[in-house]
Length: 562
Image 1 (cartoon, helix red, strand yellow):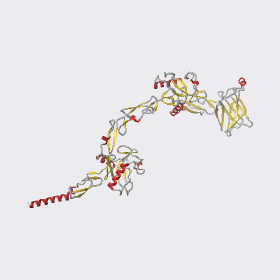
Image 2: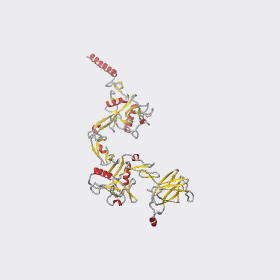
Image 3: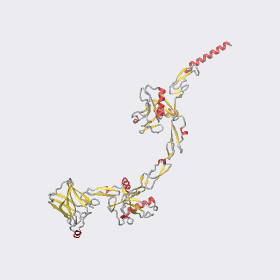
Image 4: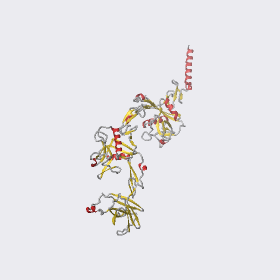
């Protein structure tokens, strides 16, 4: 009995000692941990690398952020390519870390220092940012900031291409780590993963049937058509995509809304003005009652559209515009008022291109006696019926609807001014500024001329400008000194339509040089018509024609004496 007990005790001691001596031989420590024998069960201790923990170094080391319920794993031992870190972090239930705030950056930096020390060689970690189409994005598709307090880019690194790394700024200290762009995926580096502590899609669900996807400690909503925002809370109409008073309605097709535009506008967002085309005169018209303006504002608006306030020069144009008004706003209803391109100046009504507005005839649409008033012109129904609209004179400052005209062609190209005249397009009209010696709609007619020769002065006149039987006086002006004096030469306009004056002096000869201007203007009285001479009628409103010498050329200047 005694001998058996001794043998049993010795056997137990022998077996226990053998277990103590051979425990580390089975390599119980994982992930590169170092096994050390121990006198206590399990008779070994694992000294883990800083990236791992647990009895056998089987658990990864995390730093937990209570601010955003997120765990971070910092790993410098198991170096990987950038592309491989995606699957590694995903296998942990997370994603490559997205350093979206300064607090997260400071937390991860402190963990790196805790694991690897505050001093030593440079260390770097792949994080969840990359450049795509010249734009830096995080792994969840949001933008990586390049400026501001949450941006940790090292100097000019954001202008490079590649993948993002969190790297120590200095080789001696590991504080104040920065973001760097690494241009290729050829080097294995450390990495940082983020894993959510909570189910973010459960805590923060996507609204309006949106689909939630958890990406690391972030979550992303894929919204159903018509909805938008971080939680799919807003629909596309909340952003007011329809302009110019358009009404937004949700749709099942992209862009998931439809704009019901005011009659003056068109397009997906009602940004384009609605025009109707008159093929007869190659002119487009825009009728607008929604965006009311004063006459001056209307002039500016129509100019910005490349046109002018509409000039109702013919019955055909009037009828066309009237039919458009009825189409847009109906044939009956409240009285509508639209600015058109006529205004009164010096007791005369003029269109904005400088031509006369008729007060009588088939193309005149004046309401009774309104042409005797002042102001600017509007087009308005005579009553509730919107057919047979009339012209009215109204004050300029009140806001009303308006009508613009925009030419569909380049009228100055199609109908050029002759004889070097300058063409200006005004709406669907064109105007010629004629060179000296010419007049007419297209500068096709010659006017009076003065020619200077050594022997004297030759004067020719056009009877449209200078009437027969009227006496004109020759004036001499020195443009340098800006002085003018009448000569002793008087010109009687006769059927000859020309006159030559030799050896003119007053008292010295008249010389032609660049700073001289000669002009002919009516004498104070008509001398030939005896009946007019008897009542000595003063010619107060007759145009004076100046002829300015420009070296070998003469330039005509018309001056209104009224």
